[in-house]
Image 1: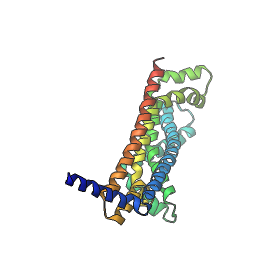
Image 2 (image 1 turned 180 degrees about the horizontal axis):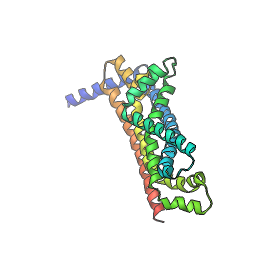
Image 3 (image 1 turned 90 degrees about the vertical axis):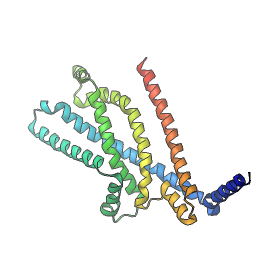
Image 4 (image 1 turned 90 degrees about the horizontal axis):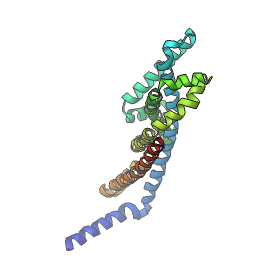
Length: 246
């Protein structure tokens, strides 16, 4: 019994040292806010880039053999090659290396680590989102394109009014899971001196020389966020399945 009490007092003292003393919990709160901001910014950037890349690649895949204008076909072939290189490089190199290159080389003059990190995560996410959208577009039956033509729609109108709504419905759960992955990836933002959640935990650990409590707290916060997001993704998937059965 005395051993249990001693262990409890030790945990209590460790908790007070790491979080209560000098209001160190505020570091975690600020880090959490920065983590969520980076995730949202990066997701928005990734979705915009992903849509552009997916449209270029899917258009080339679906229509390259039928393009009659040689100039337009040449321009699209160049854009498609650039899109392929972009997705290959961004998906094939470590995220932390991309972050370091962007922060210490491309934007070495900038002190806005949060914005640079958000851009870096967004560029990386864009490569994955592009493949998600492209897969969604390519999964739509080609008869849908023919239906658009029969209604008098051009290619852009067919994509916007017929293909895009079906594609978004198909890829929405996968896109939501990409948001969860992106949230966890931001844990390396400390390499760009961004005071994110992980960096805040390390700062507390560096001051108190007590690694257990701050690192466990960071892990539990991430776990809680992921569980909440996973719950909503699950609800979204169930609603989509129910709408398909109607």
